[in-house]
Each structure stands twice: as structure tokens, then as C-alpha cells.
Image (tube, rainbow, N blue to C red; front, side, top):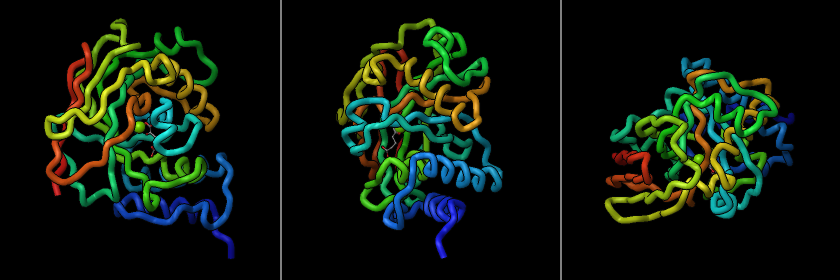
Length: 256
Ligand code: OOG
Ligand code: MG
């Protein structure tokens, strides 16, 4: 008997909960991108059912370097829950992940609802604050390899995020340099301009893409704009810190 989209959602949700690698669902059959988003929604419904709360969304593959790293050339999105939040300066347990990587990001905090086709000016007007951030991504697929529908079904590899201090969005955050360090050694460098040439464009895309799935960005939501550099693999004992021009730094450590 053929599996339902809900079967795939349960499969990926369980892999995420156990921090375990699984084969790509596209090994079974071809999926459309819409089916990928339907599986993502069903798998997140399971998390909400266990008491997790949606706190925002993450945008993915909004920079050229990220698209190249994973070989998928489309902007994607996923959902963030409270359980994915890592305290600034805190630590994560590597055992809870399959093969996590970290990437520097920019975070938006929403003060007004936003959905559908909006201009960059309208998007910026809905922002309460911006913060330096990092995302911990952990594709549930073996060897971190996937097609577009695979990764979308897997909540766009989302597994954790860390936020630094909030700043007024009147600050020009369109081209801020940053250095991500592992144990004091620079491993990635970039600029926020890598995000679609201007990070607000990621928020414009977020408003359009969530609306396509009947959702909106709400006041209090966090929106991660997407990885600014290639992602760096995490290992036990590592201390990761990203220093942003003007915005300050954000850090965490990796324990067993
Ligand atoms: C897909 C998720 C991409 C980003 O910021 O570009 C992403 C992946 O790289 O596994 O989170
Ligand atoms: Mg990311």
C-alpha cells in the first residue's frame, strides 16, 4: 500500500525528534514542492501536538553561497518553534542532532502582521527590531543530501537558532560584515548583503511564501533571513561565535 503524506510527516518528525539520519523520501517516489510543504505542515502539527509553540519562520537558500553548498536553487521556508531556541551564550547537546551545521543569519522581530505581496517599505515598517543570529541546521537526510521537495518536507533542515541583542530597524543593516569563529578561529566571513542583495527582500519573500500556505507573519514572530555564508559542521567541545559589524555578537557551545 502506498504511504500517505502523513506517513512521511511522521517519519521525518520522528527522525528529527531522535536526531537520526534517514534516507531521502524522494527515494520512494517523486514529490512536488507543494507535497513537500504539505508534509512539513503535517509534521509541524505533530510538534504542536506535543506542546511546542510556533515562534516564527526561517527562510532558506536566500544567498548564492547557500544554494551552491546544497545544490538547490530555490528560496524555501520552514517553521520555528520555541523548542528550537538556544539561549545566547548557552550550549547544545550534539547527541540530539544527526550532523548539525551552523550558519550566521540576521533575525527580524515583527511588530505588525505581514502576509502576501508586500513592498520592501511595507515589510520594513512591520519590523520591531533586528538582531544578529545563528541557525543550527540538521538535515535529517543521510549525508545532508536532498532534493527541493525533500528539504521542504524536512522543515527546511531547521533545528535550532540563537539570537543576539535586538537593535532598531532604522539602523542600516543592509551591508554589515561578519566573522563566524569556531574556537577563536575564523571559519566563515561575509556580509548581510549576501541575503538576496538586501535582507529585507527575504522578509518580502517570507510574507509571500507563508501566505501561499494560509499563514501570516504575526506580531512577536521571529523571521530568520537565511544563511549569509556556507554552514560550518559542529563538533563536541566547539565554541561558536559570530561577530557582526554594528550589531554585536552571538555565541553558543557544543556539548556531548
Ligand atoms: C537547507 C536550509 C537552508 C539557509 O539559511 O539557507 C537554510 C539546508 O542548507 O540544509 O537554512
Ligand atoms: Mg538557515
